Image (tube, rainbow, N blue to C red; front, side, top):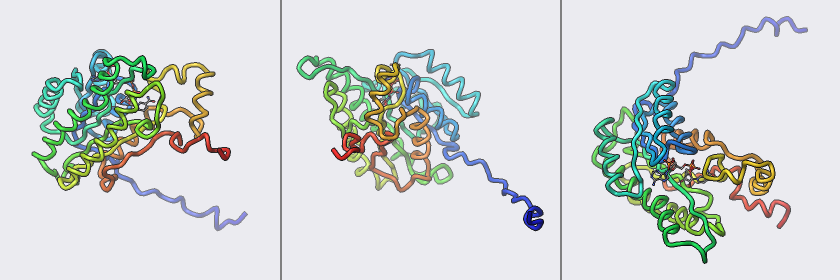
Amino acid sequence: MNEENTNLPNVVMPVCPEVKMLKGQKALITGANSGIGKGVAIELAKAGADVVVNYRGGEQAAIELVEQIKTNCGVNAFAYQADVSNENDVKAMFEKMINEFGTIDILVNNAGLQKDAPIDEMTLEQWNTVINVNLTGQFLCAREAIKEFKRRGVREEISVAAGKIIHISSVHEVIPWAGHANYAASKGGVMLLMKSIAQEVAPFRIRVNNISPGAIRTPINTDAWRTPAAYNDLMKLIPYKRIGEVEDIGRAAAWLASDYADYINGTSIYIDGGMTLYPGFATGG
Ligand code: NAP
């Protein structure tokens, strides 16, 4: 054994300051009492943001999440009931947030639902409900956030941008989905809503992007993963051969909302284990 090597001093790591990417920022996450929204709220809070946990029906889950965030992350949080497809509810929610937190820096437009049916059996109510929540709800919240971002401008000590909007879209903004025409239409709409808003407000230093998940393990798609047979079937669509978890989305959202992602504007980030890679062609087609 080479004695010289055994006597090498240990490499001393410098003490790295703890990085809180979103310290001092104020975030609103819609539909945050469940699934992806909950995962995003936790990761934003871990990164130092104060958060508003919006919910529609699940009050108990929202209150529990707020307590968990306040206790574990040392940030401020409150729950707020609002239907994102209702204009008055949305306006009241932003008013409450600005009264409580002073302003908003980050909006995560996450609330969404499915009402599936074959196209020739789809009722107008199923169509309207999905479009109203998934698309109009994202418009209503984005509009209120942008009013505040423009009014306030950049707070240099907080972020180099005047505001950030993340729309939670879906791989179905580009992948057609038989039996789910209302859902795919809503997400395709979200894609061009996002790009059009991004183009319009970029000069105000407002960034607008999509996170477009593939299959993430949440209550919205239980049938796709709860039995081994269903899970194996799902894997045919996922080259990376695992379902996504809400943390996969939450961590990306925290980074995308931070100044580390400051030059990213008007784009969709697909977080899907490769679902958008046309897995059917993996063996040559
Ligand atoms: P989830 O667990 O069912 O959560 C949906 C959330 O939206 C719930 O918190 C729900 O609140 C809320 N919500 C529904 N309607 C609302 C309304 N009118 N106003 C306010 N909140 C409302 O489903 P998820 O999978 O986390 O879905 C979250 C988002 O991710 C949706 O936009 C969905 O399209 C998108 N997404 C999910 C996947 C996936 O694989 N899971 C994939 C791609 C995209 P209540 O419980 O109080 O009703």
